[in-house]
Length: 152
Image 1: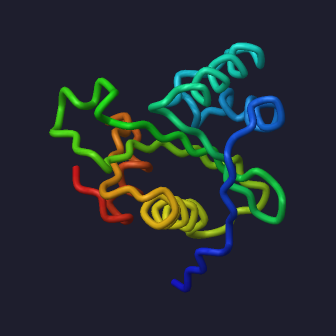
Image 2: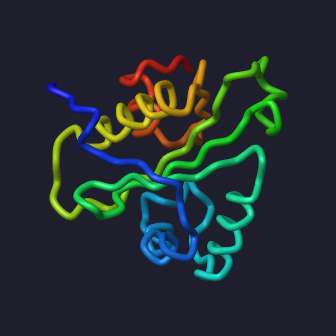
């Protein structure tokens, strides 16, 4: 598969601008792993405002042709509960991403998003390792993580 890291653009999440776009995504059936279904827009806004104010968490949105197509949340595992489960080191970045509902099915799209996210985290953010901790029941994301080179 040909992959162009310029297909998407990533910019810092601006809660007042971006939450209204992706807030409805959390109520989609495939979003239940995010545990944000049923949250009000104000609650989601409060969550992302707090995240953006944190020294150890960051959020970005990915765009394609000017439209938000994914949400990217990252954190420093050294300041997160996950550090109880593995040896977190400087340069580690924990990551979650959420792809917008498809407007037209495109084979390999989510893998392309994942590849772009990895390129961004390693080349632009300076990650030395990227850590993911998907819900064990989320077989689709676990399979995607394996395709992207993650170990379980």
